[in-house]
Image (cartoon, rainbow, N blue to C red; front, side):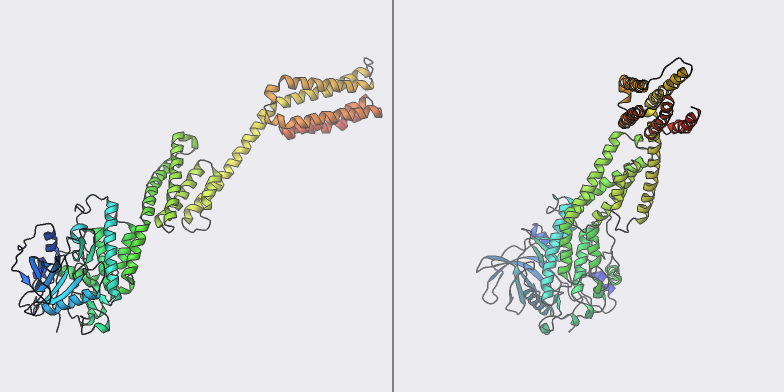
Length: 610
């Protein structure tokens, strides 16, 4: 016997019938504990019948006191009731008189519910029969709301006081509980095949229940003849707005990944406030389900969660998550990553501001064109970005936003350090990309700019150093030249006076003259010490100058012992003077090399003339 067509939205019954073409008879409308009418009752707005002591049913050994109607469909209804013997409120689902096929469907649903025993499935207390043979499903009565009313309305009292982030977490926790129930069903070979937010009940103590297993079917061969089988389905079943593509076609293709698709549709509803194939007509929804195009998600939807939903909603079953537990694990990972995502988001905002400031700064040129407080702001933002992204990676090492943020931060830092002539820091920032291929073009360009900037800086420093040496060494150079002039002219004058008979040279004259000259030079140096001693070049030359003076004194002392005359003393002084001025050129200013060279050339000539 073929199964009837199944529709879950009463307001679309007429459209669904017309979409099936001629010869289609609408023979059944499914209902469940926890549909919209049950929700209204929980809020005290349902039109329920009063309790009546006459409304008593005694199936088997139980006595039920029936209450008002909670939900009614084409072939059955759900009523509140009390088990008189124990005083427990229950929900009783039964078929209406005259519903020929409803009894068998209700019995199958009861059997499936008993097979899928799970904390997130409405408990079935018993299956009884009325005296006229109609089956009664006696179930736990759920006081609560349908998840549909909450997930589509951010102002619902259950979530109105929550922030957007906590509201999303609330819905994802509900979703994970649904995944648990479906995984339990799959472990027993049962497919739900009609998962939607209207079939999820939220109890008054935040319990989550998956309801309405009337469309469920089994994949387990041992259930054949006892439960409806998947391969026995001959007509479309489910809710078009949520359907997987294979549900519109061949029922033989239905498998566990079909329910995974329906779970993905619930996840899409969490993000978009509507199911993936929501259309104005049932036929349009069926057409969209058959095509299986992925829905468009809001721009502000979490990237990782969107990727999870897209994975679950793949058209080909083989491309979806292999199980409900795998999908649940992905969502659980997302929840554990939320702190990392939030930290990375804040660091990303700081990075955007940092990039703007550095773009402005590097566009102006030199470092002095930016006020010091701007530099401090850049450095603070840089530290915030580096710390934020690294902290995000400590929580979730594979956070793609944080990984990309670290690289972008290093690039911006390298640009800033390069423009600020902090080449060592720029090199350290670029060193982070040594083993990476990302941003290769930008890194190569920055390395080239760094090499050029280093060469320019070295050239500038060399020129500045030369200028400083010239400026710093000028006073000392003039003192050296003055000393050298006296050093050379005194013996020449004495030699001329000796030749004219005006002076009689004695060996100790030369040594005494050298001592007086050295004392004069030291005295002049002491008088000008405030200008000379702070001079770096002069400080470097003091030691060599004293050493040269001592060597000269030693040389002339040896000359006295050897009996050198005045002429030999003049020649030796020329050579000594040339060496001393060459030393000045080496330590202070290379321009003195010309004077030293002249004296070196003149020394042999003086020796020849004398």
